[in-house]
Length: 482
Ligand code: BES
Ligand code: MN
Ligand code: ZN
Image 1 (cartoon, rainbow, N blue to C red):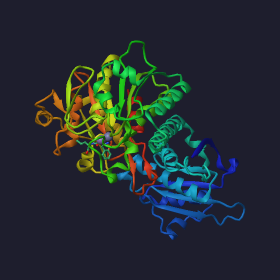
Image 2 (cartoon, rainbow, N blue to C red; image 1 turned 180 degrees about the vertical axis):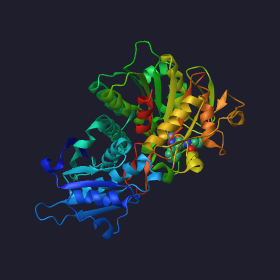
Image 3 (tube, rainbow, N blue to C red; image 1 turned 135 degrees about the horizontal axis):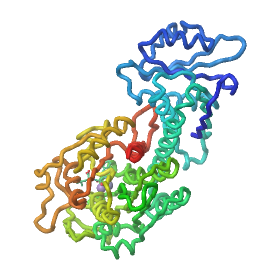
Image 4 (cartoon, rainbow, N blue to C red; image 1 turned 90 degrees about the vertical axis):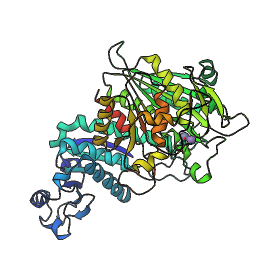
């Protein structure tokens, strides 16, 4: 969707669609507000609209002078309010806008504007997203002018931030939705470079040869089975003081995960174009950084590979050496994410980071741990984990911590090498993290497993089917909170 926000008095800007967002437990406000806008004050009641969470009512005003439409959206009970209720309302509005081809509408009333207006706008953009690049007949791209009433102008900075976050998430969705025949490691790197140039962010992209020269045996091990050469994509954004330690973001960029020689069955393979979703959240931070220009230093690192079976592919039981010299017995070539992340984490050390956050569609097991309600998060630094919990609540891209106790390291001990790349079925998400932690050292670190969050299969007010962009707004709020 193409959203333009302006501020003004709707009557003068010509919009005859007014959006009203209401709490459930406040009938007098509903009556008073509707009356002010020329509706019969009891009309919401008459149609049974109470302002419940996810409730929607469309009204036509009987006003003879000017056709007026009101769209009423519910926020639920005041005491149970979270900004996500407003985000959801925004999503429902986007659905209506698409259905009715609404071109302009005004936000007339919304309670708790300090936290709900931005969230509402996010919901509109996220809910209005569609991906039809590969349809021969394009749907109309929604073009919507959202007029925000003058009285809310003081929240414009917050609203602008929301626009940027939501548009970045849509950019990440585009990357994730793009199938692997169009998004290869090299085309991905080219896109990342184009994006960086747009915002004056420095990139350095390493070729297959350079990856081998840097002795990244784990990353290369995964990459070498594919006809598509790998890339190590890096960017650095310097908004902070010179020499100030950066936050390093690392994202898993497997453009397609067949499992390799440990081939996945087809039913588990079909969604594996999404296996670069973690990296998409890292790449899309360039939009956040470039547009909001926070005074911090950030480095993004994306190992981009395709995991394929072939005569040159890794075989189960092969032993490979990561760039820090640690050896890995590869018992399952489908546990490839941790291998490419191992070398990316080693590489992160070069930047002397203040903290490392990696994000990855790493384990199917995280779905058994947390379902589709939250990403699993594991790390070594309580302050960092707490912050990522808080921004998770704020963005409704929730994170929930799993433990990283000594017991789990037993599962990845190898007789043949320093470690093995699988710990078996128990606590699969944790043993994957235990593996990653071996490449982190003492730097404060958190790992976010989004394998159950990257794709929306059901119906959701602001997540159309397909890539969710999950993690983009989370990381953005995290960076902006530094
Ligand atoms: N990309 C997958 C994880 C995944 C599974 C993401 C389902 C999204 C949905 C990852 O590379 C993988 O295959 N992990 C294995 C690890 C196992 C072999 C130790 C898994 O989870 O089964
Ligand atoms: Mn895999
Ligand atoms: Zn994978």
